[in-house]
Image 1 (cartoon, rainbow, N blue to C red):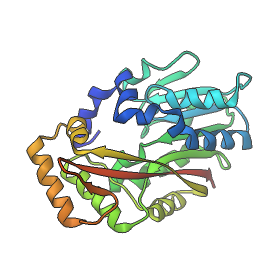
Image 2: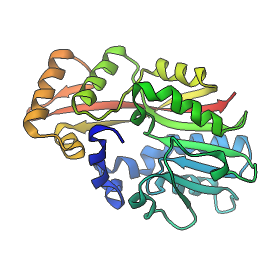
Image 3: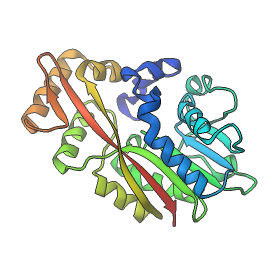
Image 4: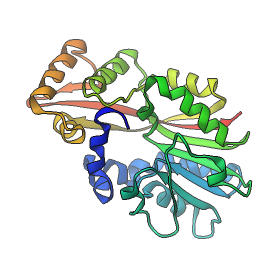
Length: 258
């Protein structure tokens, strides 16, 4: 992890499922990504579905439920946080490993079809790390296999600048692309993007960000004033009476290894 993202570890385990009004444990919010993964799996063959940065296994549980009781897929939750993996339910294999270092041999050693999925992880790699990490993920897949992910990316360049200014000031190391920029990065590293659909926007208040990243109230207020000067009418940055809110848009992208 980079910068203040280490502070997120206090939310690991079951606490993560309750954070941010339960955004990451709400089946309705997860539904677009779950549908996209199930469609990808049904378009290929059931073998291994690996969730990279899968945390407590929530997404894989939802996918398993959508595939039905007769599915023969191995479900593998990949995460570097033991506190997350310890909360995975029965029926889901766990792999204590970073996304950056995971190899195909750890997931599909028998050579069977592999589908990768990922939710809200790409921004952790930063601007410089995005393309190298995508290239690594492409190396894990055989041509024709799927990578389905839900990632924060903004339609408008000004909105992207605003979001990145906030996360730069909080020293997180996170970085958000535009939608076109992310599609371009995926295609340049050997993926073909076959679909791109919206998912529920994640809105985070200043106090929630203080808690998540260990930022002091006075520092966050100063960051809010800078954001307001930068984008007084942005749809991403919303100034309230007592605190601001940042609204981050997600897209679900289904990609095929070319």
